[in-house]
Image (cartoon, rainbow, N blue to C red; front, side, top):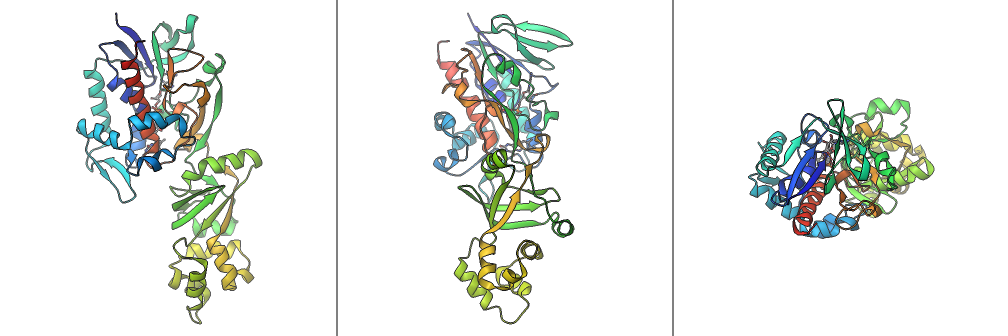
Length: 400
Ligand SMILES: Cc1cc2nc3c(=O)[nH]c(=O)nc-3n(C[C@H](O)[C@H](O)[C@H](O)COP(=O)(O)OP(=O)(O)OC[C@H]3O[C@@H](n4cnc5c(N)ncnc54)[C@H](O)[C@@H]3O)c2cc1C
């Protein structure tokens, strides 16, 4: 007789799991609180659906904090495997100059979602929308609300794919932590990741720098360094250059309420080379020399003039020190409603290598609902797809 398998949540990882689960072995029902599946997946596609990244597998896995829990799953379903899997579904991909991988130009996120939904339908998975999981009943049955009625659902296998807590309008509200906590499963409150970071700018600076971009810089926090670009905003800074430093910045903020970041405004040049270039700038005004010999914009100059003393600005050696090691202090993070992703959720020691909850055998948790961090660049979706695919393979091959 077929086993009964319930999937709770219909986001990125559930879409792959439901596509790949063997419905000859399992009667599968997917419960989703929204009227449609994949709402966050569509939001993710708004600015270009960055589905994965093309960098080497060894480098790729290190982007996750921590990465060990995902290693064996990623070994079986890597970024390269995902691209092949998508291609087999008819979704061709292209790699941008930054190494980020997207569905081919012209393929809209809604079309990618439609391909997944078709595969799930062909796979005979029953989809029940407007069904909200509300905790556990007797013998760990599922209590699911539908049309103001509380249904009690018994299953042999349950997979939670509840997502994180950013952009709660998509249905990923993170309002289920207490259900697991009541089962003595360790959970952590959600916090923002890949979000804007707060900097208290001097008032007269804001109007001059708001919306400006610092390109080709290198940022560091703690032991981590990342090259990229940031956007300066009224709130502070955001962008792909700073998102990978989220774990280090968050850790410092949690301990002291402030986090220092250091920016190398000219990573392509050594300090000696910068001093040499400044010296070769002639008798021009120093701001003009910075523009001419280092390609600095007015924004670089306004930042330097605001945050370092006039004496340091006029001294080539000291100025070079600030250019290579420009300090800013972060005092907060954007609220989770505005963040791209979150950390928090089910603590990783609570799951085994197959994503099964150790204290609830037969219950599995995958995706952003687990407490790990990943930067933007396709790493979030890749991890969700990897977990969905590998869990399907595990369930299909094990005699549960
Ligand atoms: C603005 C934005 C842009 C992004 N861009 C990218 C990008 O380009 N590349 C990338 O890799 N990642 C991106 N992400 C992140 C990515 O979308 C998520 O990491 C990913 O969708 C998480 O997948 P998931 O399956 O874990 O959860 P989700 O996709 O969040 O799905 C969880 C589902 O569970 C449902 N649910 C929750 N609670 C219940 C309940 N109690 N009962 C029933 N159903 C429930 C929710 O309604 C939701 O449909 C972006 C995110 C945002 C917000």
